Length: 321
Image (cartoon, rainbow, N blue to C red; front, side, top):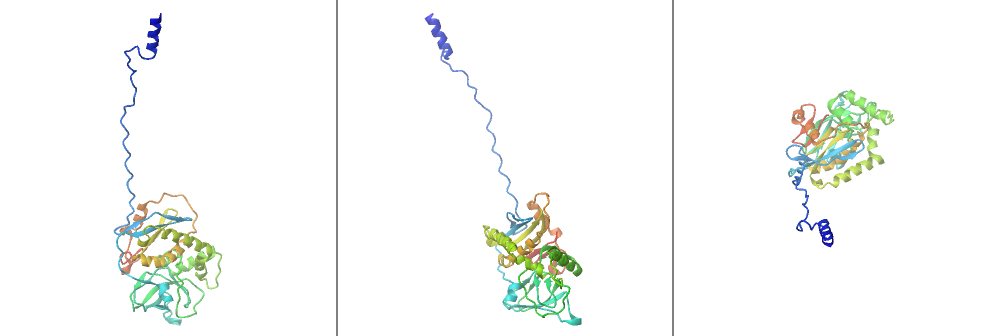
């Protein structure tokens, strides 16, 4: 009996099979293969340029554009800086019957080229105007520059203009490039009505002044702060404007220095254009920006052609939607 009990105990403890342990049931399936690394996002914008991560403000979004190559050793003066420094004069062309509403005379007395940009506002002449073309004016040169009138009820004042460094909002800028003078006046009336402004001469000046109000300045300052924090800020040469996930504007310059001189004007113009209601649409991808700058859609206005602008190998790009 004792022997039988001993065998029973040994069997229960696994010792009745010559001390062998029960077979193991280990998982012998192959190890999972590592997931492939995600393909890097293509941020290129043609030879020498790349885009960076978008920065959003309201319904608008701006995409920084940086130069990947060493910028050329070029220097320019802007219209506002040139007038303020007494290196540039902008004057009416005659008065009375010889008055030219669609041109002004610009004289660059300085030692570096002057760059004037579509949408820059000039005041205190016989009528308030806005520059309607992108031009480089060599040192010592005097040229006639195309403008659009942004005021209807006045034909008196000084022969010389001043510039406050304000750029018209996007919708008005596009009218200056792609529409008639009457269309520009109509757009000004629409903008004034939207802001409940009733200037007696129907000028755009009062609406432009809204870019200097505290809320607009706060937003512009915050965007400028984020742009300044970019690791490659010293290579920043332009911006793409996106509204409701659609690219609507690209402004790209030859040098970071010229871009920096115009950054505040550009941001003010972009923010003043953010008046559209938000809507759901497809997500913006880098291909959308590249498609907007497709050479098949761009016409060179440096040689006098119309539509979108590409001046002097990306001195500036002003593109229509």
